[in-house]
Amino acid sequence: MTDSMKKVIRVVAVFLSIVLIGVIGFKIWSTGLVKEAMKLEDVSIDVSKVEDAENLVAKTVETFGKVDVLVNNAGVLEAGLKPIDVVEDDDIDWVFGINTKGTINCTRAVLQEMKKNNKGSIINLDSVAGAYGCGGASYVTSKAAVIGLTKHTALRFAGTGIRCN
Image (cartoon, rainbow, N blue to C red; front, side, top):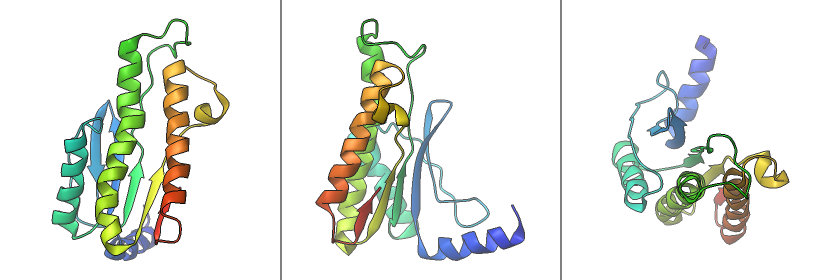
């Protein structure tokens, strides 16, 4: 990363508190943006649990004073991308728990803070699999649900200063 890139990120970091949800080796994590740019907080959570999502938002507000941006990037897929006729219930529960329920949980939790200021941005990462049906049954349907949730949230908060893409 160049010095000029770090300066731009620092300027952005002054104005934004960003929560990034992702998966590293199936461990869920949260970070403040880029280590060089601002204070970094790592918080291990299970996004499929409502209380973990709420605690993540509370920790973010405690540390940074607010939440400006939520990036829902947690996503897993079952081994072998199993089609509908062979996918197992455990696979479905695990994939939906993180991909769909995790996105819902984090979005609901952060909206409680964003609604206080009528300001914020929620970025949901889905997959072309959700739009076109290519991939395993549980992954495809979990990502299609995220696409629907994104559209719903965008319409629900249109004109309020809270965006969802």
